[in-house]
Length: 293
Image (cartoon, rainbow, N blue to C red; front, side, top):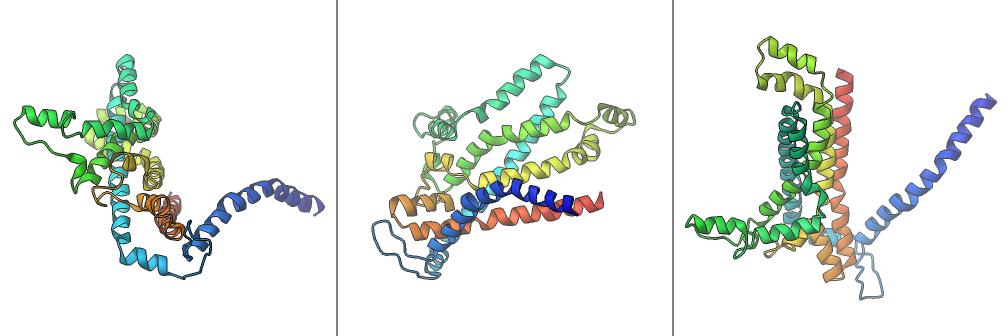
C-alpha cells in the first residue's frame, strides 16, 4: 500500500511540470481570448467595458457568416484536393519502385513545393496568375483566347486553393508513400495471380491497409489548412473586396487595421469550433473502428 501510494505521488510529481505548462500556455490564453471577446477592448481606448454578446452579434449579422463559409470551403477543398493529389503521387512513385533512380528523381520533384516558405509560394503564384506577365495568360494569348485577371475576380479564393493544394500535397504524399511501402508485396502478388485488376487490388487490399493512416492524415490536414493565413494574405489580402476573406484574415484586419481587439478575440473564439468538432468526430470514428477490429 505504501509503495502504491508513493508511486502515485512520484507520477503526479513527474506530470506536474506538464500540467503547469498546459495551464500557463494553453488554458490561460484561451481564457483571455474568451474573456476579451465579451468586451469592447479597443487598443486606442484606455477603458475596457463588458458588452456581452455584442461582438458575436455584430460578426454573425454582418459578414462573419460569409467569412466562416469561406473558411470551411477552403479547408474542405484544399484538404481533400491535397489528399487526392498526394495519394496519386504516392501510387505513382510506388509503381516505379523497381526503378530506384527514376523513383528518387520523381520523389524529389514532388517534394520541392513543400520546401518553400508559404509566403514565397504565394509570391511565386501571384506572378503565375499575373494578367500581363504570368504563364497562364501567356498560353491563353497564344491560343487567341482572352486573358483573365485571375486574382482580381470573384473566384480568387479558388485560385488560392489550387496554390495551397500544389504546395501541401507533398506532405500527404510522404506519409501515404510510407504506408504503401509497408504493405506485404506477397499479398498483392497473390491477388494479381488470382486475376485481380489493379483497381480491385487498390480497392480491396491497398486502401483498407492504409485507411487508418488516411484518417490521421486527413485530420491533421483539416486542422492545419483551417489555420491557413500566409498564402491567402500574400496572394489576395482577402480581396478583391472580401471575396477571399476567411476568419483568419478577418482577425488580422480587426486587430491590425481597426485596432479592435474585442472583435478579433470573438473571431478567434469562433475559429475554435471547427477544430474541436473535427477532433471529436475523429475520436468517435477511431473508437468505433477499434471496437469493430
